[in-house]
Each structure stands twice: as C-alpha cells, then as structure tokens.
Picture (tube, rainbow, N blue to C red):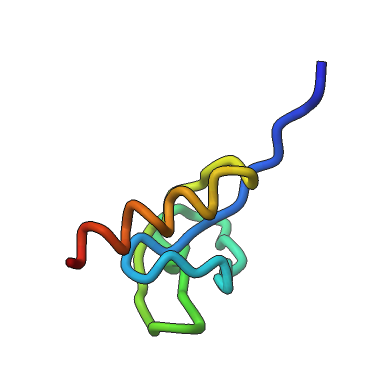
Length: 64
C-alpha cells in the first residue's frame, strides 16, 4: 500500500509556499502558518499532494 503524502496549502490563494513556524513548548506559544505569496496567516489545511491542482481549480471557481 502506497503511503499518501500531505502538504499544507493556503486556503486564500492556493499556494503551497507556506512557512510553518516552530511550535513552542506550550500550545499558547505556537504561531499561525504564513503564506509567503499572499501574506495570509492562520491554521492551514493539509491535503494530499496529488490533489493540489484540484484544490486550486475549485478555489479559482469560487472567486469568479
């Protein structure tokens, strides 16, 4: 069985150019993910790598 690979993606622009800050020792110290392309911050979803293009297509259709 092939292991699935996951990647974080920006829910605003669909970019995978994400900075994942290091977690602190306490959950209150952790910082949100950061999209280097659109400067969005937050907790970004992880999707399967082979579904990135589909996610971007759906996101683009929502904007229209």
